[in-house]
Length: 472
Image 1 (cartoon, rainbow, N blue to C red):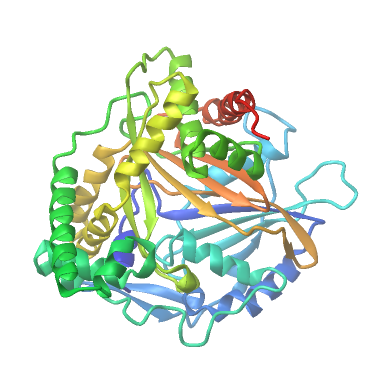
Image 2: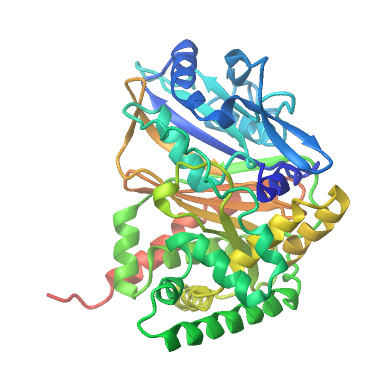
């Protein structure tokens, strides 16, 4: 197991398990036996899904599970009524069960994944609807990789290329470089990451003139040193009700989805990216929620650790973790939605060309080499700098089919590390945008209070965009 994946393996705490949890709504309903057959035929072609983890003093290794049993990993799930609400089933019961499973450790003696199928979610529909809850440990792969892999179990899904499921240079591809000067680290690491980080590296690799290479090398080295200093001396995040010592229970929520075309239209009309628009809505929703709790957020900003892909998208099927983290400032204290949008856009522009994702990847690689107490202390540096973890994953552009049924909805929840108690997930699927939220029940027992504010925040931007002069 690579050092970075080992870091994710060892990052589990009593408050935060490093599992990616997702839910699919499938209509008409499917059966457990059919799902087992599909998983057996498709997913197990990825070796990681029939391997267990063995740890030793030097790290961790992937070993085939000789006692592998599909019945242990694909199980039936029955929704129970919500506590204190007898007879209440459906969406509320699903939320409660997902929150429970998010804090239920996977069996370390076997491969670190499990699917829970609710064959019938209830309701009056003649065809019925199934719910598929997926739990996969982060050490197996990141969001980009797992999204690609999970597509393999859908109808027409592609199987992995033979003998290329893991990148050949996965083991310690960056760790060795950490012993070298910072400028050389940045250049080598970003170059190995392919096209996903900085276009300037490509220009450096193919300069028009030898002098260009020297100039670019010096510029990148200078930028890398600045980024290290900026991260090291970054003050701890602003204190709000969402920061503190998390407990041992989670709450989950999700919103009504937004039409992607409308989000694109707002972005185009206001001269911002889709990401700028969505992140502005997140900032507005969190700020409004805190105000409703009596907190004065005027002028306040919080940070969210945002993953940045370091893997070429052509290699998205390769498992493992290949992403860095950047601290994005969310201006929760700006009430004006337009002003807030441009503040978010400015913050995003500041991160372009930054080497912080690679440097964060390097810290995780080092953390994978350390004993648990030292690793925990090192990773808590990230928690002190941020209030939330937030990720935006592009999903399939067309509706998926699963065993002849349609996957109506995709949702997932990003895990949090250290003492971070809020995870925001944004997923685009089949022309719709879905917000998901997972929170620590001690710090935020009512995530619906945040999630229900996403759509109103977007509608403010949509209304203001529609009021702009029309250009014929």
